[in-house]
Image (cartoon, rainbow over all chains, first blue to last red; front, side, top):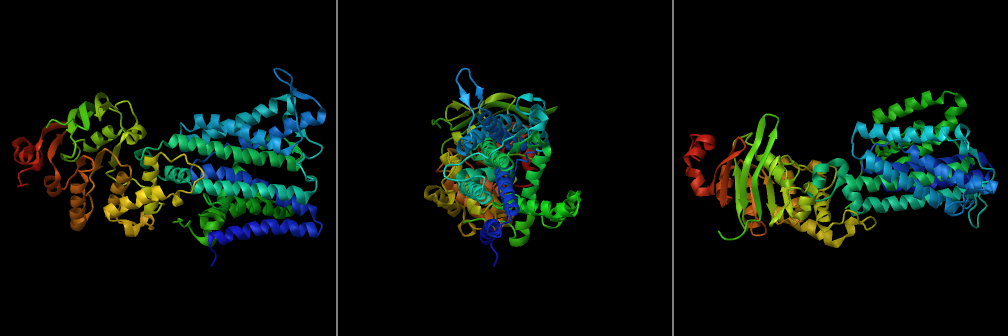
Length: 327
Length: 251
């Protein structure tokens, strides 16, 4: 029988097998597609913590994706131009080291999520959606009008950043790196969901009054969930920028926020692997349908509509039914 | 009675526009007692419970809990302080199992909600607290059931079980018998009878048999005002109460 656990393992195995096959068959483009799917999956897993588990429909996660992207862009562009980011009060130079870039991306996006969350979480429902959208768009227009880092044109990074011991320009090695990060993020989120925090966060989505009556403040739970969620999405933004060796304000646009939500809805809201399945499917369809027509999103829209109408638990819901409470 | 009350309401009021939902209500809950709050529909009983629990802010007056003024505290802080409430309309996490709902209370009581990495289902202390509470209300065998599969009466029991996990020093119970049926009602009555030794109970209840069997004292709320407070026996025969609430029929 297909249980959720087996499905999860199957999906991860496929996600690993396809680029490995492509590597053997010498199809680097397929490896790049798989890497793209993995990076999108990380972004989705991040958002799913807030949206799926906590019920916080954020239409502003592009902000964190973009902050992660620009963390990479700014650090790497200074490093490749041999200029300091600033010299006062202390000399701060750019870097081409992935671990440092990731750390900066995580911290910067967590900080932004903390600030945006602290304000947005005072509202709920449709107002929360709108205020997160507004914050996301603020970043978008700011990045377009800020000339220092390419403005509307974005920033190109000539050589992919480095990771100790790996040749990151080799597609399969870079894929492996992102895949390991996806596994680590999935592991972290699994732990979070199984903890008392996860239990309380899920309860907050279902019934805030119940949570207050047991002496737990939903606001603080939401804020922590939103911050962690933003940090994970920020990390994926840094990886995405490194994949393309390019960042632009598009990463901040609300289309990006919408896409991340689409991964979650396609795969299954609140399910651990929902965004992974959704992102893989999205990248696959983007490639296949994109070959058929420039207007591939019309067909994609129809597929999304079918999922929403006929498989309300997303593809995971369709395949294995609703979530079984672990006891 | 020389013992200091656990919970005191001092002239608390609440109005919604022109409607006065509670009008300078004063009331004491003493150690070890069940204090029943009765009154006709719309008398303001649930409003009063909400004011005590902190989900509704009073317009005036003070709530004193264990000698401390908690009027300025919100519902979360009052729950942390030791006020355990049950809701009139079951307020549960319906997608969770029965055990998970009870665990939520145990986690809240232990202040564990920000324990991020430790699996809650493997936390012995919390699981035992949750299971003991389910056992106490007779829901132990349904622990693995999804809460939305419970009957109405079982949901009432789960409400009480969650309140138990909080180990409160006063219970606020809003109609715990509602929808329980004869058998369930009797079991719950016996249960509350024993529970008062753990912590006093402010009990809002429509089931008059249960009220007069359980209550040490009864307060009668009519149009937001307490018209009488006293031992159950006296209230039963109080002419004003009979007129306002119990009607002509023999109680």
